[in-house]
Image (cartoon, rainbow, N blue to C red; front, side, top):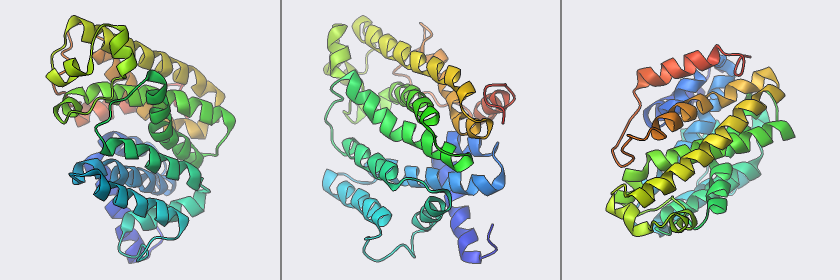
Length: 287
């Protein structure tokens, strides 16, 4: 910490925000040295602020305005400055300190515009791009904070992001279906004889289960690829990918034939910490 009371308060605010709203990533930072942890928490707090815009508005336009403020902040053109926003202050600090590419952060914001509307996810390719520009970007940016960026890291981050993004889309199925938002690609639903209406009905028909099994298998393929690619990146960067161990655990559960994919399920914090601790001791994630 810098010793400045205002800076310390902003850092503490970000840590608490991530702990409360994204415990998976918060827990993963506990396995990182404190000087780098602060920047990671700033990055993840920014992501929390962007993601939860969808739950804070009832119409798309107010959500677009909030997301535009973040875009303007990154560009240095936000009205009113950032003095009253500890997340923005910490994010800009981390961006400057670690050379985080603003373009990747801006793309993450733009991609989350999709969340504000009830348009269904059209194809698997579009869902892959969505996951790569959100979860994948966070993996790549976190790796840059812990070590540095590279083509190998970006390649790994894309696979890891798709695996994590697909796992989250399936795990959030009952929540999204209740608000009539469909992240299961229409293309995939049609290919297996299912439909958007079956998703909203909240019933795991045989056709819908086949669709979701195909999506789970695709996520597992990306997860396996990411785990293989870990060996090709510098050891310090590997800790950025610890959340991948949680995605792997979740996908294994979702793939079980008896799992009710419309039953809300929340992994316990103890299970989260235990999974991350075990993964941190394996060769794949070791620094």
